[in-house]
Image (cartoon, rainbow over all chains, first blue to last red; front, side):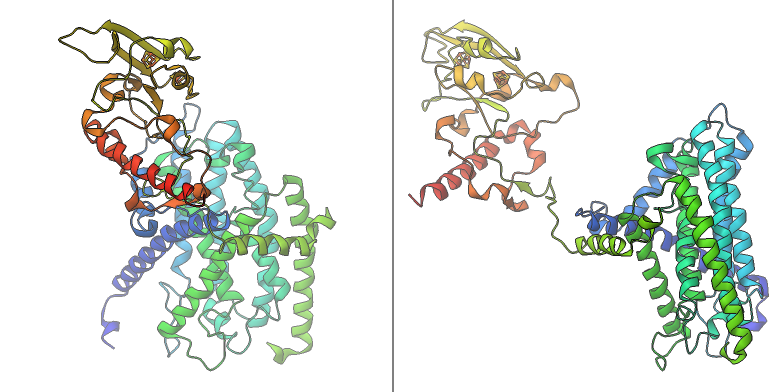
Length: 337
Length: 207
Ligand code: SF4
Ligand code: SF4
């Protein structure tokens, strides 16, 4: 193929640009979708003034964000305060470098880069993203952001454990940490069936990891004004906002890859892979995103001690049990994998 | 805590409620483009009426100003002269001002007026950028001669019509921008009168 004649860095650059463009657009419209769907669930129409059916609302929001004043409190640590949103955003974006959205017939993954330790990379980057939130609250030099960031640190650590545990079940079944292998292993049976407990734990912890309702104690506007981003305004606030939604999209993509068969069709026999596979992938991820919004408009926020209780006393033991059971099952019936 | 957390039935009820609400009819009225029909006795912006011959009804008696609980009305009367006859009586209102920011829209001025000159119309879109703009003088209160006499309160339909909750379509309603435009006032008044006349007809029919 003539494609191989093009230097690899150009290929990667083009791929990155495409993925970034798509992801940012997805962010913009998942935000609109959230406001719309939440509106419908609360018997409101949601935004419908900017453009037909409110479709230009994200653009209007972006313009508003850009032209708002960017304030830095006197008590803030200026460097870290300014840096924090970028840590959040870069980590949220970096993950998309290795997420495969589909695969060609010859098995080539449709991703910017193909990392063998894909899932580990994602978790590593995701964990660094917590620094964005923690440092933002810490550097704001004000009490509510500080409380928010303390909460975020505790919450992230407790739920990240269970999240990783729930995913290890999938890794045991596949015997690989490469995302492509994980999806290919689900050709016959999606992992959501043998790993139903793992899936449930993943869903719960994913919501907590992305600081979304009902686990949005980091923001908790009724108690903490705005939590870690209380002092942020304008574009810097916007960056946190983008990061939050990108994280949502990331965990939705991950759920699709790990448990819902990635780009494989739901019914064996239908075409998967290629653009059809991309369609399946988007459909599954979108369903997961919808679930997020649904969750937000249904459940009230957790109380902080219950959040900790739930994470350590329920999710972690159950995830561990699931892990042990999976390991035993794979050891007893090795062909099962 | 465990009991609450694992009450799956309650969780499911919550989720099904929010999901089913997605498909319910919204009570939202797309306000500036679609307007709700108000009650016929709605108390809104005032107007000063005229007689059929075009003379002002107000005789500058200041009874409305005395009746007003909010001290919103200022009337300064003047004598009619044979050359400049504004009203049928001896006097007319040289200045007539209502501060709509003070007004509580109680309608007592309407009750007090011996000549049915001051009445409250159903217009309510009075928003403006300056406080001063809410002091309505005769130029904005008095019905323009070409717009007729204004609707007397007791000729407005009584009671609350059955279609109170009904929604008027955008093309049937007055454009909000015109509401600010004093030159279009006659048009607005006519439109409102047409609407009220239509309402009255629908009310009278069953009897
Ligand atoms: S409606 Fe009531 S408050 Fe308003 S001007 Fe008339 S009497 Fe005064
Ligand atoms: S509006 Fe009526 S009550 Fe008021 S001054 Fe004129 S005539 Fe008298």
